[in-house]
Image (cartoon, rainbow, N blue to C red; front, side, top):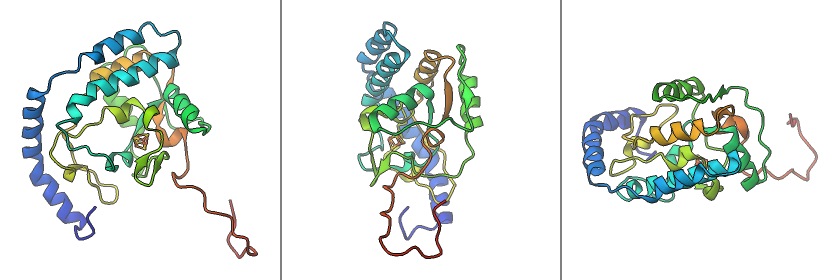
Length: 228
Ligand code: SF4
């Protein structure tokens, strides 16, 4: 958040922006031409020999789907507001992130099981169930950049703000505003059903801990601080 902008000013600005942002989003979507490679990549996913390969194809499809929308969106390189809000991923995506990062995924304490019939309502319910934790940086965010960009989950690839700037994405404390995101539910539902039986949880549940590199261990004699 801009240092001069206090929380109440931000909330006020966001409330007055929303109607215009929705209008902008609708007019942009009406002009966007779909990338036909997204459908081809979804088809290719059906021929994959393993669930992990299928998810990789679907991640590529998600990027292809988002590409023309990103071109008219508020999303810019270096902006990382959405890396602080809930990011739900499957266990299969956690394994792909583990492979890309060298980190070992943990068993989530709060998760839901994906079944083979994910409706739009079920998707909303699942995500609602997993929310509620205070906002915090994604464990893969390093100096404002995604450190696992090529392996980032479908949730990250499809979250596109259709406004003209990041005003509605900004947050102070734990408050977030409504954002006119592009609707990626169909892709997410398809991707989840392709990995039925897997668990679904926030990315921070699979990879707890800070994104920052651990502080160097001091060489001086320890004081009263303990490492727990
Ligand atoms: S995986 Fe990357 S893009 Fe996704 S929330 Fe984390 S840092 Fe951001």
